[in-house]
Length: 114
Length: 116
View (cartoon, each protein chain N blue to C red):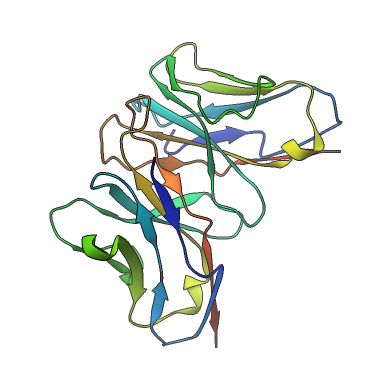
């Protein structure tokens, strides 16, 4: 596709449920990032993939959060036993590999845990 | 580890007035610097980035930013604000983290309000 695509655009789930958020990056981009953005805050880094491997997962808040990118393209962010504090907009971005490359962002998935 | 400080969560200007959005960074090495804009209900879009080729960087929509190493700043400016500039603006810094990867770190953002 022309840009980074994230699905669903909105997700409402009950506390304690499991959710999956999908990111389809720009074709050919080997780098993929997940960020979380709470209201009134900047994007907070979660995890970074280079190809299929998670090169840096230091931003994942706890072991309820996990992400995969099995074929080096589409990525899925998985959240187990959701809590109300997980409510936020989850942003995905992709870029070419390099030191000063621009990250292209999707429109995000707004997750609401009730 | 790098960090970004954006002074002022909200900046209000009149249409036609100068826009100045402040960004200071903390990095142990010369970083890569970016400004992104986020319009309501849209994703982040790159306005401009510092490439070390020139300290004054020109971006889209008439915005520019000046890299000042001595002040560790990368402030965003536009000579004349338009109503369509109303949005959230984020400064980001990227340098090599502990994992060896270049990952952008974002500031809290500044909301630009433009009055008619």
